[in-house]
Image (tube, rainbow, N blue to C red; front, top):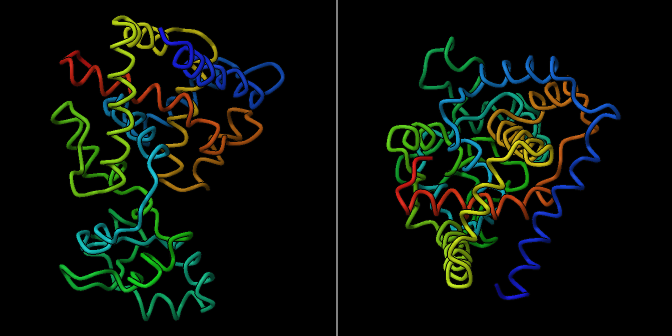
Length: 272
């Protein structure tokens, strides 16, 4: 294998060692881990794996190019009370005024969505916060969770992934196109250099090694942070005794390899 490629892979895998700094001094108690796993499974069923964690990896590897397609195509943009509070503060207005001017009642029954609202938006038109001159969303840094999660971690996408047993592609999303091209180029190069290299990586991510198991846990937690918000994940983090949640940059190097393995398995028709 090319030395530069070998060093790249080794460097990405080497970042897993630093994740152990987040563990409590005595590690995570198996009993505590089992309880938190049960709570996590109640939030997102294990039946969505590896698509939930795989989409979390794709999410943190992608970089929104603020093209505005999501802002136009998604008609029911849900906003939780936490979202409303955060966006209102960013805009320098009261939460009450923001909710009156920019939101309306949710289209679903309250018992299903709680206190969530819907951003006022006409079908097939851009969200009121989209600004072509910026470019893109003018509340990008504080946008609702449903916007942050699109497309990879939207509920609809997760349902489709589980049903089709495939990761969804978004052919009109420039971010997804760029990411898949980058991962595909890496995989092609790896197969040219060493036909068994991707299989070796697959075995690595299926191992019971402490670092791999921690990475899988943290990646799933990161997906839940994106999907449910930081408050819910903070509770899980405390229960596990972790010092903090990792930032996305700490997970990206290994997440790239993990995503490459999953997408190659899909291409090869290997069960995920």
